[in-house]
Image 1 (spheres, rainbow, N blue to C red):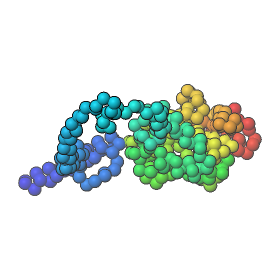
Image 2: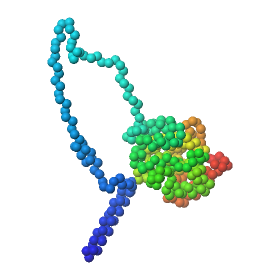
Image 3: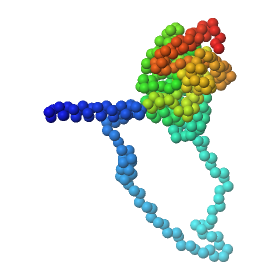
Length: 309
């Protein structure tokens, strides 16, 4: 009887532990930083308490005042110094790219100014690795910049990395990536003949959708990435990428299957095709027929047999 009671208690404890872990996973906590929790507030207070206190400086008594005799200059220690006529030194210009707490508009302006200076994709990737203006950088494991061939004629742009992409450091590495590979293979494409990226290069915690502020901060980087890759055709995977890059407000089911003009900063214009995201197709397999129509349009456009819509 006692053994049965103990086994039952162990089973309840195991179930409680699994429920506790499930709660953390749903909250977006998918990695442990240490074997035990830390009270950071108590640690900070302990450091402050252990720090030696500086002794107050001894008080200096002013020298005795000596009155000047008639016709004699005042003692040097009592002469009043006139203010300098030189202009005050200018403060150095503020930069918000290194401050994760900057306002979204300021961080986005800083990101646009920095991205415009990059002349190669390698320089742009190095800039992103050091950019601290987006708080997603501090919760993600890796920067997910791009995969595939940057010299390809077609560039696919998704929304943001998931858990597999964050772990590996390349876009579309999980189940949705496997489906994208099969969709590309159906029109004779693979990762050596396509270039793949995301609007947001860092994974949002818990795979949540990126906020409008996060997208606005990261948008200058993907726009510069598109300019440097210079594809013939841009493929927007899903509603966030389509709305961010084309400016349309339509939902993806209405926007898909159409070519939109995408204007580069130098005035050139390329075509952007809107289609469904592979992750959506995994949840709604019946919609794969629509994605197949879109990819046939892409194939025709690459072959030069259709001008697009």
